[in-house]
Image 1 (spheres, rainbow, N blue to C red):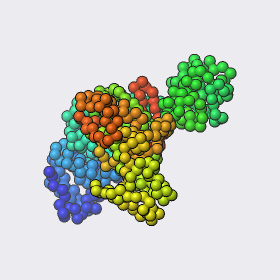
Image 2 (cartoon, rainbow, N blue to C red; image 1 turned 45 degrees about the vertical axis):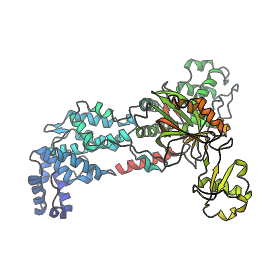
Image 3 (cartoon, rainbow, N blue to C red; image 1 turned 90 degrees about the vertical axis):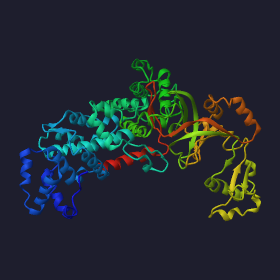
Image 4 (cartoon, helix red, strand yellow; image 1 turned 30 degrees about the vertical axis):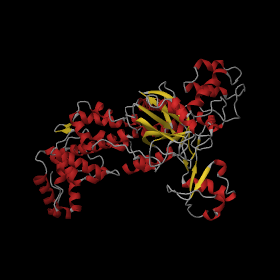
Length: 583
């Protein structure tokens, strides 16, 4: 590796930076000048000390050929001009890559920018296709630099374009923000491409469009969302959707003037054939229009009752621009996900309150779920399910015991007995049972309780008859519940963070289908005993707990869900902050 400037040189760093700026002619953004102009700038250096530094650097340290020498100087003397929150780290990666090839450029030659540079600028200009922003990569400025001819201007193009490729490659493959940095509830840690590997791939690839294309998520889900994003942007350019006037609750059979607007909006959504508009008689809300509204409601997570109330009207009148923003956020989330979720896996979308089991790319089971309350948000993460527990005990988390049980015990020390909950002296294995009437519960209002609350197996157990374990730091799992009525709700955020499954025995049946040791007859027999039994899975099954507020089904149905945890808002803010750092 070529040596960094000496201690003596570093002591003159301010002068050195000035010299670098003069040598490279970077005093203004539109610096792509003629070669003669660039050479003239060198003549303006009057300070002998600065001239000596530039001369020594150019002759003793930099490569002998003009272009590699210019690339070397561009890296050495103008690192700060590229901007961005992680500019220093990116420049170190670039330095190491170019040092390893003795500063031989990959985007430019003696005659100017090569075809790869032109293609790469085009790719960056089209970054919006993936929900990214071309300005994050300086695409417009790079488009002007491809016309440069002088070694100094070409060196600037070389380094700016390489850094843009590193940023674009990272953003396209794993997203623009670190998921876990948004909040502690998102435990996802995607790894982006290695810088040297990415640039080496550019060097060796004959088709950089194809090469960079494999960095994007390869799932059909991502591609469908990408295609829909383009379609929605076209709708936006044409003026958006018809807005429906406010009015009283609209039920089937009613007549209102705004039904014409409703019908037009449904045609725009692709849910109603255009000829149906002419069949609307006397502005009556009936027939195909009602059925189209039900489909619309279903695709937006609303109760599909055909009644146009405040929630349905708000969804119908949400602008296409707002929907585009939501899709962009969810394309970012898709980039956090693995391309290989497993041959058989469990997929939970918290925002949709639904669980799926997928095998060989086909959904073999769907089930409603109840997820955490907005102030007990279920986290986002992936882990392997390794065992199930039949007739589980519920070891009540201390936070729930303090917030939920203590007020009841203060009012009635015998309150836990009706729920078959025992109070133990501590969390130790040899803890003894405590008589609740012997405890001054009022004294624990302002301090920690030493007790362990344990609910024994039975019909009232909060975990029901079975739980599915995929050990994780959040102590979150899937489980049965005695509160079956909650599954009839449209919005199902009622738990303390774990995920309740509507039909856990059906889930167990699917997951144990290929295990010869555990038939459902054996599972049912074990459940009838009322005793705890651990069932180890013959092979681990990946469980992916996700949060998606927009997606497109295989049949092209575009779905949106409410942001129940305000995670869209948090992600949007994080992306805006990232853009501020870049610009």
